[in-house]
Amino acid sequence: MSLFQDTFTTTIPGVRVRFGAGVRHKVAEEMEAMGLSRALILTTPQQADTGAEFAALLGVKSVGVYAGAAMHTPVAISEEATAKALELGADCILAVGGGSTTGLGKAIALRTDLPQIVVPTTYAGSEATGILGQTEGGRKTTITTPKVQPEVILYDAELVRTLPVAMTVTSAINAMAHAAEGLYAQNRSPISTLMAIEGLRAFRDALPRVLDNPSDLHARGETLYGAWLCGTVLGTVGMAIHHKLCHTLGGSFDLPHAETHSVILPHAIAYNEKAAAQALAPVAEIFGEASPGQALHDFALRMKAPLALRDLGLKETDLDRATEIATQNAYWNPRPVEAGALRQLLQRAWAGDAPQA
Figure 1 (cartoon, rainbow, N blue to C red):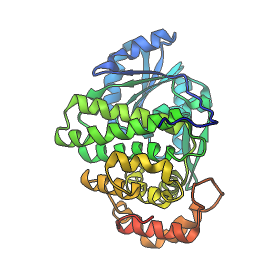
Figure 2 (figure 1 turned 90 degrees about the horizontal axis):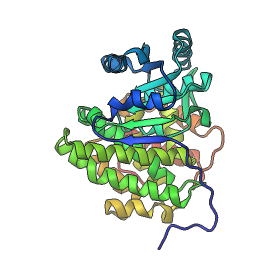
Figure 3 (figure 1 turned 120 degrees about the vertical axis):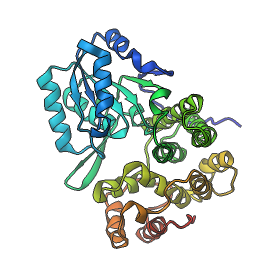
């Protein structure tokens, strides 16, 4: 049976995407194709050396490196980086890194309309979206606008070959969350569903091979392929309870982004699996179990992913406040968002227990 729906609307963003080992060396070529010549390179402090390598690669096409990107895209850092871009006369942004660096590039683009080239070094997938999450005053908010959609993405398997295994796993499950929740999105389409299923399959097949041999370039390339597919799903449909919980825990309690997604995903999918049984059936089929939530839990367990919020630094006494924040501002979800049920979900996720439907 096909995935046809009687009615649907889909918008595919006009993004140029290139895959290939060594494709990072094509940044200058992409700049020239867009008539650009002055790139500000963005990285986190930990990847400053990588930024310097790109600056050397670009030569006179680089106006400098801003190595201050931070998790959850704090507004203060975005304002500082924007001022730097304007001061240096940059005509584009080159973001090299994961979700933190990509987020900073988007924040600058929001304020300046500068075009963006992204070279991912994780599997976050946010480079494939027009979504920006920003943190200010202890709250994380998101906006969706074409202004923050990167114009070019270069996926180079060589850049993720040395990504530590633990970070590989959490970053991959973060990407998988976009696809899993996209399957029951209110505005899903046959196209988004096809991409979600293919993205999950790519991670199912390639992630175990990466764990067995982290330098396997083909497996690394396939995981980047999965990240692009899952990220594109995130960029074309709305999200629900999983992403709301992760934004709450990250923005209000400063939990690490990818690790939080890894812990919450099985529980959020289990929460919705009865209300969205047909939509989530592909998850059970892909991972070979009857329960989609349990299937994702068991996959995470095999991949040695973190399973408990308490291991990420969340206190049990924070769970009531997290529930309160996550139930503010009504939002769509296949199953009604009920404070009591959400509190139980968070308790299980905090303790590292198996999910319950």
